[in-house]
Image 1: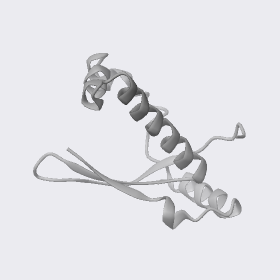
Image 2: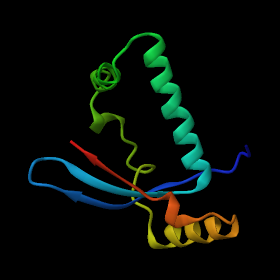
Image 3: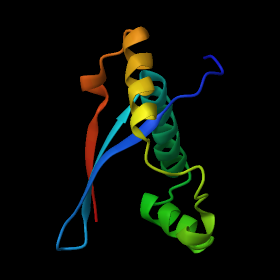
Image 4: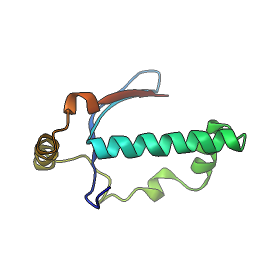
Length: 107
């Protein structure tokens, strides 16, 4: 892998009456591959040590408040220019953007 950054962008967030939300994200192939690798690694570690994923997420939440940990200057929506560059970079790399979108309902 190269040292070039990969990007994950939040395209849409729809909040629902039941308190859940649907997020639509887009990412380049490098980000997708990295997320798959890290997600699988987390699942395998949990299986090997017989730890429930829910307990892992609970532990993360117990480490502090979300408000305190968010870097307001770094974690933010992409502006129009950044979205345009992300799309251009993906096209230049021959990536299929339509296959890199995913939706997840978070409750």
